[in-house]
Length: 117
Image (cartoon, rainbow, N blue to C red; front, side, top):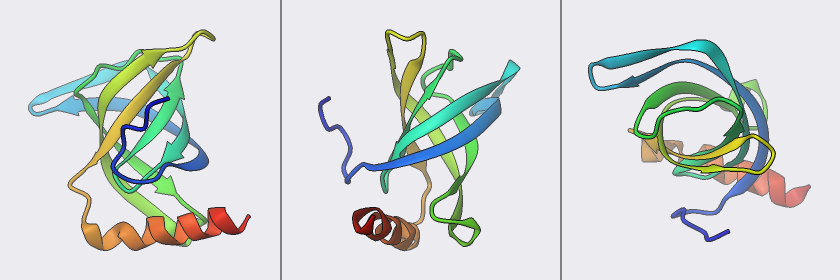
């Protein structure tokens, strides 16, 4: 896979549920809650897999827990690309929107903990 992120990808296993997507004044209520499995995270975004078909360019709210409750990160994520996988899943690449650089320490600490394991 070609590295397309501006910062190092870190492996992670998080389960999220998405029920609403939004794009400016448009809100899309999903018929079913989209279960997603986050497979990697970086300072600039996340990669995840899902059986649901989600539109590129839309946003959703997420809560990422990187190393416990005290390292929870509430963020807005924009879907920027998707690739169909052979197993019926779709891989999505997303970027964080409006993330304050001061929160980089959360990713730095998570990276250290991953490297120590």
